[in-house]
Length: 178
Image (spheres, rainbow, N blue to C red):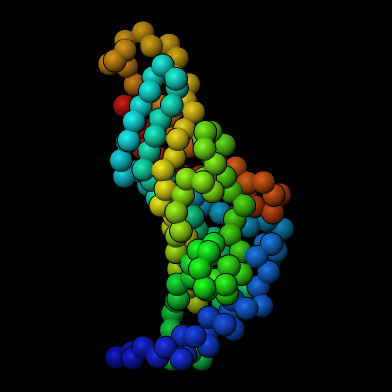
């Protein structure tokens, strides 16, 4: 069985994260990075039909591949993955070197930077990254044509976009809210 070695884990994290520039996206053959985003709904906090606002408690999960993060587990006592906490505003500055996709939700009233918490990124030896961030979204929605209110079905989904041409986003939204 595999025994955890903190020294090896620390060495691995430094080797992988220290040389990174968080403003330089991963390089891929087609010139863009495919990023998949999913909003996992945990709770509807409030719905205000009159003002067109919807408040949700969510986890935003983002997945991408970065070839700069690859390593051979055999060289590091079989370690397959490690955790990083980018943008945590604490002592682990090395974690802030991890590139994060420049994605944002376009129909929020309060910016995600002000409404999400610190999340962790699971970095795998094959270069895949799974970043998960909890938060509260205050969405601006169009609740129109309320003919059968309150029995009609209304849809209001977070819409994401990337502010750089190096990201090719694929978004999986929340389930429909009725």
